Amino acid sequence: MILTAHQPVYLPWIGLFHKIALADKFVFFNEVQYLPKDWMNRNKIKTATGEIWLTVPVLRKGYREHKTSEIEINNSTNWKKKHLQSILMNYRKAPFFEDYAPFFEDVYNKEWQYLADLNEHMLKWFLEHLNIKVEFLKASDFDFQGTKSDLVLDMCMQLGAKAYIFGSLGKDYAKIDDFTKAGISVIFQDYKHPTYQQMHGDFISHISVIDLLFNCGPKSRDIIMSNNISKGEIIENMAKNNT
Image 1 (cartoon, rainbow, N blue to C red):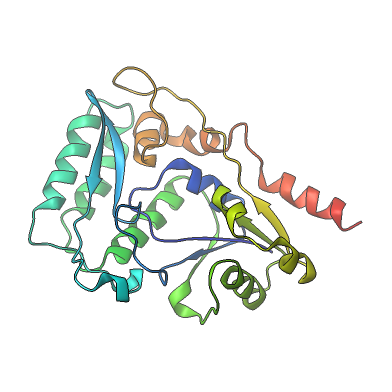
Image 2: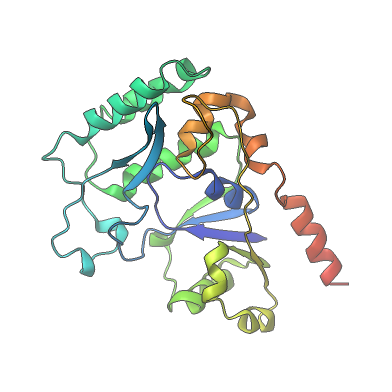
């Protein structure tokens, strides 16, 4: 079984979906500490004047003592109206606007108390519409122990993983020898960002997946996976290493 995990992210970039598509099980890691000025509550979209940030305001009092699952959205500002208007205005002429716009209208017309709940709801919808089939688990439903590499290893052991996919930054903290001793293969994602037809001039990478969906629709999954390692290749490499 191939496992990967990631903390809650708002309107994720396409590289996250490549990582999830390589796995059999994905852990939505809502138990980590909230990080301000990270991707948990913000991301970028493309506009006619360049990229802009869409940021979900949160109640930051005491956030250093709270897990991500406990972070509340600051609904005293009309952030939902701003985000919806920004998305609708900048993608209304995109080829697949009519296919996906109703989802965002529905999302931003609902009340959200917790940031992780909003991110989870949107992530599951993205996975469905990208046709990425994976068993979706939540860290809050388990009792994973340790920090950094030790935490990941404990998660792998508890869930019975034979391989774990780290993001590229995993190289900075993964204790590979510990995984090897436990019989768990380690893969570090090295994502090669594809280009695709965008609106509004020159191509901009590393923005929200919604840009890809609005522009490319059903082809989005193939574009995400193009020129990158596939799940089949990982399984094949694992089999070779075990012979």
